[in-house]
Length: 233
Image 1 (cartoon, one colour):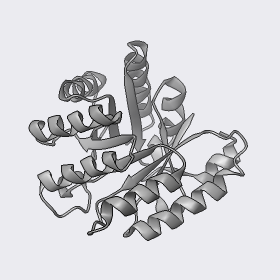
Image 2: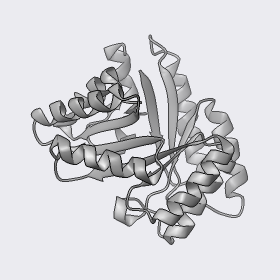
Image 3: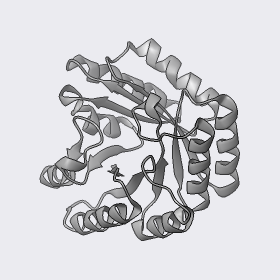
């Protein structure tokens, strides 16, 4: 199982500290899962941004997913959409192996980002967050197809799980997509969706998000490293 640890803080220095703490904690995890780091770039930049980001990515000693979300995606980035995509491009140049771009991003900007990813061997994740429900399976499959049409190497679909049966919908989504050899990340947000964070990867979801600790959760329902260790996953 791939575990992705989200790092969402206010400075690259804080991010470095969290990465070090995560690496220390992972040494005590029994099964030694494959690790990725998700670095949120919404809140910090600066004149030495790319050089400092390159250093951070190198210190992760694991593949990095770069994320930069604007307000429309419940992120903190306050610049223009063009500026946001430039940050993701710079992340690829700094060594990020993947970038996560929202499905509502302008097609031309997504295309420009895709070109940079291809040139430097990075993967493009196109993501869709649905904050109020888990749609029916046909609707989720349409979202998946739309993201692939935009150029996604991996499609991320995160829904709000309001009832236990919502997990079954996500399980079926992952199963169908995986059977076709396509890559997907499926997540059920909220307490009812916690089981999806274990079940979806077992059915073929590319990864599951695991927080460094309770304060570091980037979505409701995320397991922590301590909980994963207890589960021996």
